[in-house]
Image (cartoon, rainbow, N blue to C red; front, side, top):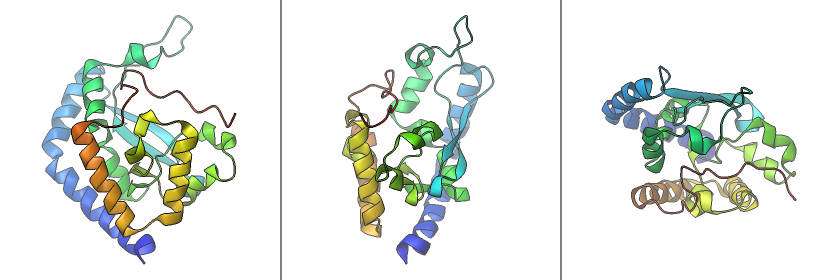
Length: 201
C-alpha cells in the first residue's frame, strides 16, 4: 500500500510544502544565477526514470558552458562558478527537482537518476535500479555519496528496490538532512565531481 499509494501522497505534500517554504531562497538563487550564468539559471537534462522512461530533470545550474577551441565543453573544474560551488555544498542545486517530485516524474527518495549512456553498461542486477521511481536522495547517497565507488552505489540502489518501505524512506530523509547540515560523505569535493561510470571492469 505504501509503495503504490502513500509514497506518492507524501511526495506531493512534502515537495509542495518545501517549495512554498523555500520560495524566497529559490527566487533569490534564480536571480543570482541568471546573472552569473549569463541568462540561464537552470540546468535541464533527459534522464531515465522508472522503467527507463525518459524524464527531464531540472536543477540550478552550477557550471558555465565554457568550451575549448574545438567546441568541446571544458572540464567541470574549469566551468564551476563560486556560486555553483556554494549551492552544491549545501545541496541547494537540488531544490528545483522538487518540481519533478511534484509532477510525479521523481520521488523524494529513490536511486538517483543518472545518464542514458550508462544503461548499456549496467549488468542485469544493476539495471534493476530503474524498477522504482528515481529520487532526489537515496540509500547510496546517505551511505557515502561521492566517497564510494560506482559498484557499491549500485548495490545500495538495488537494496533500496528490494526493501522499499515507509521506515526506510524516513530513515533516508533523516540521514540526508543530517548529512547536508554537517556535510558528511563528500570526500571528492564539488569542484571535482565523481568520475563517470565506464562499466563493470
